[in-house]
Amino acid sequence: MNQHIAPVELSKSYRLLNHGPTVLVSAQHNDEVNVMAAAWACALEFSPAKVTVVLDKTTKTRELVEKSGYFALQVPCYEQLNMVRQLGSISQFDDSEKLQTCKTEVFYQENHSVPLVTGSIGWLICKLIPEPHNQQTH
Image 1 (cartoon, helix red, strand yellow):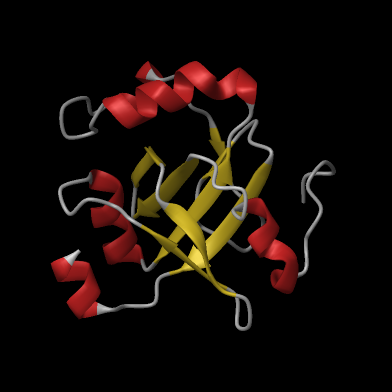
Image 2: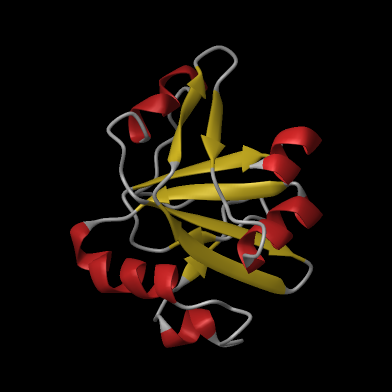
């Protein structure tokens, strides 16, 4: 485990999202990895802890989330401003080297196969709770 990353009680994890930041959403399925910026993420329930994030049906990241069943939310820092803007402007469908183009490095925590963006100030590894009606309607 990275010495600079400390686990936080799940019941306190909402504090990362409660202030409404733009977040980075990352996911992986097999060898495909992607990261995108998302403005619509928030705490949904406190116990059990749940988050909601809106990802357009046409995004590569959403495809990877639905295939793998996992994703991560990252809170970026000021130094990542340009990277966040690029990640939100470039589709991996248009640029297969999107992460290299945006100079986005990822790492993995032990026992997790979800990519985490290096340099962020907070990370939440999440499991998808399928809601077919909501996923198709919204």
